[in-house]
Length: 228
Length: 294
Image (cartoon, rainbow over all chains, first blue to last red; front, side, top):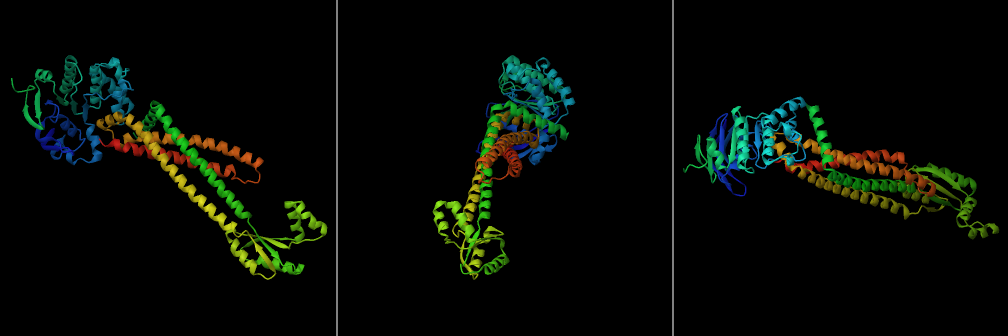
């Protein structure tokens, strides 16, 4: 379903972010992308979101070659992906409900559909009682759940989470990862970039480790580091 | 689908205008001030031009007749003048009438001549041409006619007046273009601030998969609405003020002709609204372009 084939990424300022990356992720997989800051996780995620194109190599997602995609096809492609950010990126002047509904509104969804699916998404993350609150009134964990609800409300086939627990305490972090697992069990592919050793070690999922822009390890039921 | 989106754009535009109340007020004020200046200038320009045309139309040629001519000869000369191609109207002014006119203008200075029964003036024709621009040519033709002693049309004034109105027109145009460009620039900057304030929103929209035009439309409507609102205010102010000025001038400065309010205000309002809406729309398209590249 996701295929990176000899992907290289050099930024215009000369920084080499990714070197010869090749891996495949199947449908319904849950993958941790681990590595220190600057290892290339963010670049990889931004490439997946087709924010820019790789310098060399090919990226195929859902059978489509991102490097050959036309500019006007990009929005349609992004609708099949849900993104969760470390800094949540919620609209603070709108309610929780509106934040989630926003993701549907901007795709021109009918109001009937919005009224049905937004509460479902909020129930899935356990926030149905806080629909009328605004993000600043919520805890960090709750805000990240809103972000998760927004990511799943359009029923994407792939969820990309970029350090979703980076700003959260360990207990809350675990809850968020468990939510991602629950979403994954329903058939959605999940890629989570993280450097949270505790979570990765506890979950025993597939781990792709990046170091200096290269894949140094790719193992099923892996741990954060191989040296123990 | 399309209608639903349209409703969404309008809602978003209004929502944003009220959410960013101060910014919106600033934008509207910028358009208001700019268009108020522009509108005043248009009114001024139109009136200067109108006045110039009025003055031009009042310029006439005075052709004085030789004293030796008998009345039938004068009548024949008159027939000859009216035959000239570019002449619209000829009026005969006898030397007695001319003296009366002079007396009305200068008063007692002339009275002495009357008492003595002397009249140093000549009979003359007052000639209007069909277009004022023909005056110098017609004057030359008249001077060549036998029986005409002297031709006078303010030879210096007429070409000068024409060049002055032309220069005024060009200065006015340059000034108005300058103002319009300034307005677009100011609006672009103001809307850039609203767009910056909403960069997060745009970023989320892009990541969720909204199309570029879907993101653009609310801003375009916002710019259009702000621009139109900014144009409506000066349009109303100018309508009111001009009508007042026109009435006041008619009573107090009756010799100063102004363009009728009905003849100018409708066009001016249309022009200002169109300009305001275009300035707003252009401004928002300029400022959002940069943010769409994600």
